[in-house]
Length: 264
Image (tube, rainbow, N blue to C red; front, side):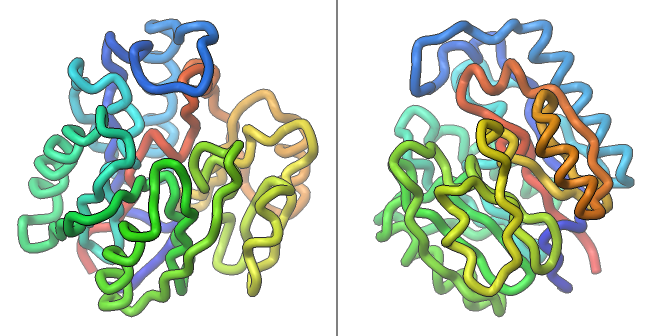
């Protein structure tokens, strides 16, 4: 299957559960507003669908408050899904739900299990046209990445290990792919991307670095005017989306979908 790192036929999302405020988070701030979160999630789904993709909205999982962040339990590459081993024990059961939906869409023959022996969160993986960049973090360790390496290399992609600074939850909290050769990144990560053009996130707008390129659109969190201006000036078709409620539980745009292609 031809590989593209930002053109997709499908996205998988999962409706926020009523238990979402009970999920993992770094601080003890305000809880998300359930109705506002649901509205934001609906707008997110509609925006992805408007690019021409099919959006599969899975039902909520009340036993797994973090399950709206559907990106973490799996990695989709070249028509296959790798079921990962999340770094937070409370999220491990999310794998079964991800496997079930992805099997229905992709077929059982295209599901790969990451072997036991390490941990990897999807939020620590940035896929480009030629390589898979994995940031070690509290949720992803070297043992897990080395188990992932042969799976990725068998698909013809290179895997490169990087280090996520301690104050950044996931590698992709601070960086995102914009096109074949361009990465958007916070200042603390801007030195990680040898071989790429890097657009540095404006100081003070670091949460905006968790954006997604999805087909012809760049989706960026609302409320970061300098980032929007910078990206439009660089020639991207930018649409802002509210992620105010997801941000209260350390989430962002990339976390809330698994993006992939099915077919030739």
